[in-house]
Length: 54
Image (cartoon, rainbow, N blue to C red):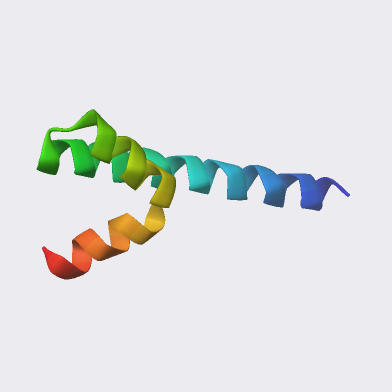
């Protein structure tokens, strides 16, 4: 049971990191809080898009 709790914590922190990374990249690129929030909701999809395009 403890292993399952650790897996959940790892997944949650990974999602949080992806959201934060997407928002920082978005704000640095577009200088817009609105787009930072939108891209934060898309999180890793935006990060992968940014890596491929830029």
